[in-house]
Length: 258
Image (cartoon, rainbow, N blue to C red):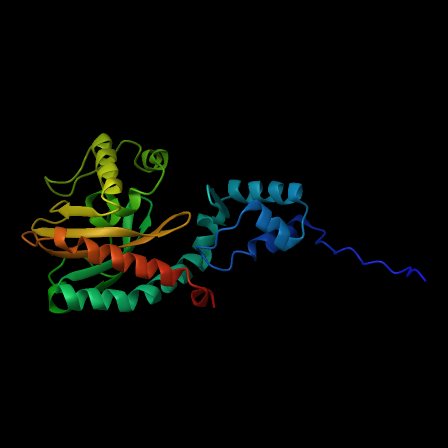
């Protein structure tokens, strides 16, 4: 006997606001990145409807669209997502930063990129850190720091152009003040597998080596080792790269999503 019962179709939210909320709820972490197909699959919305809503969310800056997919945009992050993401980054980085400080005897920084500035999330280094012109919660011009240049190197060149609009202000006589020179420096950083150097560009007498913390869709932060201008930084390259890899792996691990 053939059953007359059939599976009931999934009930989709009737209003546009409910559908937008259904999509935004998928982005549980600031660094979550989802493709169009994943969003349509998880929400149960038709692909064409999903694509139309995603486009609207991108235009309104609730989401960003990258080569890897969609992620939270500046408007979403401004509602508190940025603080959550920064806390997760600090938690993932803390043990690695302390180990680097102990091994190197230098000052260790953790920062994120905010437009054309770096925003310092953490600073480790004991008594030596007091004399360093940086502070947790402080900011510095990205193009004048190893931290900032390391992150800028992995952004699309056109985005760098749009952020600076041809204007770069120097902090010292060693600062980069020309956009073409900045692009050349960023190219050298990529050729060095992401290692960025700073020699008195932000503060006279201070040298830094840094590299970006990278997710599939771009840089999510950076770390640096800072010391006196006479400090030999090149030998520390492997330490910095290995530390960045460890932090990135921890940040993207399943337990960090809990």
